[in-house]
Length: 391
Ligand SMILES: Cc1ncc(COP(=O)(O)O)c(C=O)c1O
Image 1 (cartoon, rainbow, N blue to C red):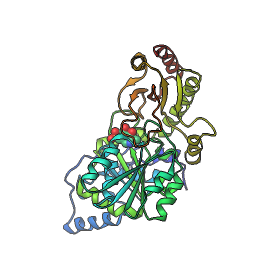
Image 2: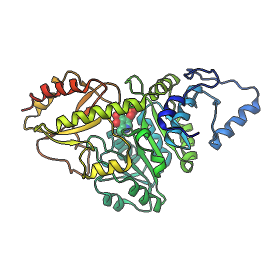
Image 3: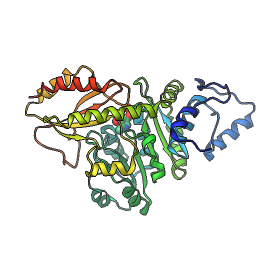
Image 4: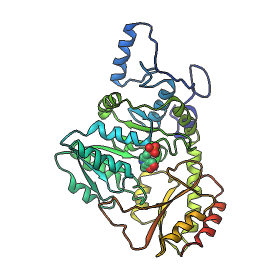
């Protein structure tokens, strides 16, 4: 019988061997084999990409990390999943598996800033050229494609400015030219969108965010199709990427409630946006809520839900008063990351590293919010009192 994702999230981590509702935490380095032949056969199985139930050495994983790999593979409808110690290293693994000297990569201009640094800085040192494209104009993407293009790296929506792109069009452009596609899908998670089913070759999630949901773990996942599996496996093995069994357990535990948490994040965020859109100090809300806009239509076309991370533009000639607004919020923590149970806020300098400066508007400041699982009416009351500080 085929199960829905809601049911899968509840049953995928059951441990059939120990008969426990939860998998065991297996910490390992050495793994024992019955014979030398068994050890040699193991390596062949992993090479084929067949499902494994144990690895030959702890660097490759343990029963706990395998349980998480298999869980995410099911959720992503993938051929296989690789786990890394942070979301960022999953981005690095995807890119470094594919790009070689002389290749070119095309990247969303509003990509997560450290991803920008890997491509435009580190890859440059390996003679891989990066082009950035404007996520609101796919013509700029098309114009960068040439016979050296190896990969298109998409982040959807873009970091801080939250542009939603026409994903199928990107895949079509890439497939025509045999270009590998990867997407950073941390915002939407495979619960709201299945990038590999759409046609992407690679789907990345920072498990630090919604997968874990409790702000107590760092982990990355890279799910891939059959076409790119061998290249990623090779690079993953040689670079020694790995997620710890303890962190993998915490993510398995978090995933059980992914659906419930995401729905609550979405419901509360919509309530807060309804409040913010009536506030005249808020000039624009960067969230897919306005029917007829490109962002809304592209979101609706590809996602079955929306999450709790968005930005607003606030107009003010007094930057300090925006900082005061942020400092006056009592229920929103000031800190990096998102996707946990708690509400967060950050002032974002969004234009420093962009090629396409569409968003530069004098005296418009971007404040990014993550709406957590607190009572949304109390979050609104908090925002109301803090907004008074903006001059
Ligand atoms: C869109 C996106 N991708 C990747 C990452 C990196 O994840 P991690 O913090 O787990 O390294 C982040 C972190 O904020 C992110 O926002």
